[in-house]
Amino acid sequence: MWNAYQNGKQTICQIAEQNHLSTSSVKRRLRKIECVWTQPDLTGQTGYIHLDVTYWGHNWGVMLALDDTTNKPLYVAFVKSETTQDYRTAIDTITTDGYTIKGITTDGKKALFKEFKDYPIQMCQFHMLQIVRRYLTGNPKMKASIDLMLLMREMKHLTKEVFEAEYAAWKERYTEFLNKRVTHKDGKSCYLHRKVRTVVHSIDFYLPYLFTFLRPECAGMPKTNNKIEGTFTDLKKSLDNHTGMSQQNRKRFISGFFLQRLN
Image (cartoon, rainbow, N blue to C red; front, side, top):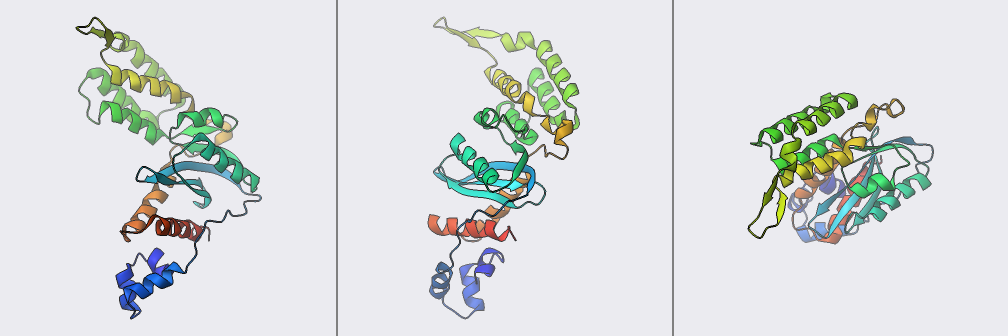
């Protein structure tokens, strides 16, 4: 019944009908299944990892570390918010259990790039593009924004040297645009194109980490977090089949989902 519930994506009503039971009987039997994430033995394993958190509501989520080659979970924990200490605990747990981290791909929490400076760390290029799109929209109107968006969309096809050169050329071409200020009635002034400047500050921060995967010593490193995003999507699709679950049952389901992926 649990396999049908979790992996077969069958609802309580469907399971009850197939087994000629009432829905309350099915619920009672499923509650007897204990699914608690147990940290696996990672001795001798090595590779690149994806690290991220996904949320349900605003008060809890699940942190996941995923091996890029095998797609197996290396670490799972329920968190209230993705603090730097939560990420540090994840990395320390993985390494203590015997895993050798060759590099980390993550999606933009700035404190992580300092916290894990001893590892090669890759800023997810897709999330970098999403940050830019968030401020400029997917269809910007101003010439400077249009040109920057075009460059960011081409980033995945460019080398580090080419991208940096074109980005520097863009900043030089639009220096006056970026520095333009407007004066309000109270006499105070501010930058006119603040959203574009915010984007520039973000790109400047992440620029050293956008092409880590191209380093000779980082051959095979993923440049996006697509694999972990895909895993989260599969998890949420499975949960969507079971609406109205309590937080406790949801956590049990999530633990079972990742335990099954260890096999």
